Image (cartoon, rainbow, N blue to C red; front, top):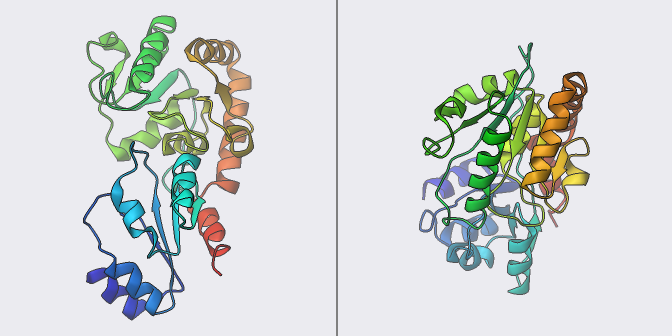
Length: 267
């Protein structure tokens, strides 16, 4: 009711709705938007398997159902509803290179959810362990439940959101490894690291070359280690790659860019 009331007062041409929990809204919301002539989009930046029912249940009422992975887009299209890929964006007012000076070391930002909660949870854990073993003096992981998985000196602990840009601005290299391996999908941690000027080694996904031409895409855990070792051996080159990453993200991956893309969907 609050969302409908706000829309009636504001009279938007386009509504971007991110409701990632069942039961937060009902079909009454997108139906009301359609009645007032507003083009409506429901979007999720997360991946869950199987796809939660509420996305499909509401797809007939929203003009577009969008995801940051192509697998779910294809699933909704197969059911007969309009679906589009929309990559996540980054707030460059928060994540940027402002104040970045001396960079060193390698970081990974992400939680440990055990071995089996998500499709790639076990491989993420193995990647962090491999990094701590290969770079005991240069690598640090920030997030929950890593104590006892890697040595204490490699654990940075839980990182509160306001502190993560500072950690990324001090790091020379950031690594990325997601819980799902799907076309188009990468956590916003990739954008945050590139926006802050890190040289990035990220798990390969279909589309990474087009979205991030100066990020090093790794096909497996040994490849991550090899690429990080190469960057550590040439910190000037690594810093240069970080600058290119930041410029690409500022130009192409802000939410401003995503809004322009959504506006092109209006028919």
